[in-house]
Image (cartoon, rainbow, N blue to C red; front, side, top):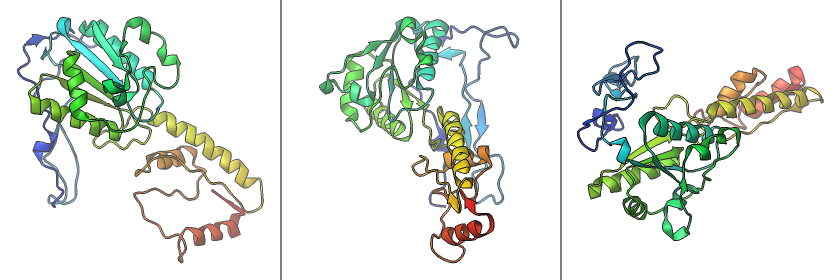
Length: 303
């Protein structure tokens, strides 16, 4: 009960009253290409089912995402910045391209810059110049791997990064990254709030690990699962091609087993799937090696 979530943890803070009409226009019917605005008070249940009221957060709501009828910043005078952090992940350039095109063509934001090499590039001591994110810059980057802006790992001083944002007159910072990136963005947002600056910090979850709380699927996860499926199928062929062959595939995931679990479901060729969330015994009776030995005795191969 000590770690139970509270409604306050789901609150999304704002910079102030939203008085600027959205440039997206009001939709009258589905398919007209205009926005279907989401009222600010619209909520989505955090959990829709549970067994016991005291064990499940049945009355917690998330704020529903979507375009608002009124916005805080005037797009004509808005300067946005984008940073891609952490490790490389499939789809980073697709996200970057879509973000820039939406800001430029739909909202009318004409001043968009990119920080090179993650949070490191936001720290002026490292000497990385910013990149103007124009239509020409992002037009075909979805065909390329990696990140057009580059990435890096490691923390930077939030006070220094906010100094840079203030100096550059950045209104909105978009952070594309995973668990560590979101923690860094949270530190930046806290420093912004402490100073009373009017800077919005927006996070876009990108990680093949799929380990961001309250996000069902992150960018890069589906591609990772497909690559793992191919590796599992290859290990299956190798294992069945030799006496007592064992196919072993190790995948990323840090503290989560989503890639392993989904890869096994996609392949349906796996006998044993080990994930961090489920403890297992390696040597004891009924443990992994015991079960593996029995599997080899029965079928002559395992994976």
